[in-house]
Amino acid sequence: MTITYRKLKTEDLDIFIRMRIDQLREEGAEEDIDLVPALRDYYERHLTNDTFVSWLAMDGEKMIGTSGMSIVEKPPYFGCPNGKIGLLSSMYTEPSYRRMGIAKTLLGKVVDEAKKRGCGTVQITASDMGVMLYTDFGFVKNNNFMQYKL
Image 1 (tube, helix red, strand yellow):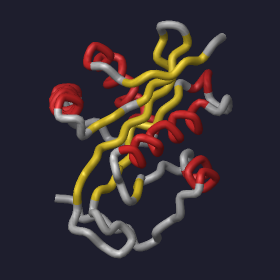
Image 2: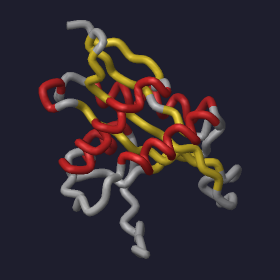
Image 3: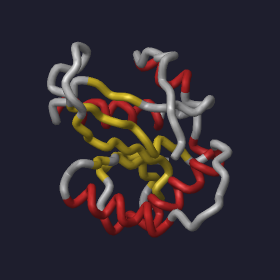
Image 4: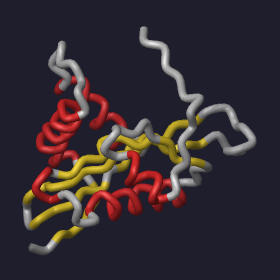
């Protein structure tokens, strides 16, 4: 087995979206709508305007791991004076390929992308399974994160 890494292309979206839905299911999301059209629309638009980047892990032609980062801009603040942040998502590795360092490699690649693109910070809402990966990498928990569902 030889694992290689490359960036997501639009022709990869069918498999990428399936893996994103697998990730959401594994995290316990409630499926009350068909999310595929909205995901396709999002990824196509943001890949085109370069505000979403994803690195993939491949075993030959098989996609086995995904990462994703949306580049967003907020008003500048002291911790991020340019206001440009990377929002991580879609961090997923097929179960039979876990514990091989694939997620750590993918995380490193998207964090490098954030640096290249001038982001001042990278953020993620981590699943219980992912917390150790992110803290080992150097992410710091922010216990003040809150969300209001509309």
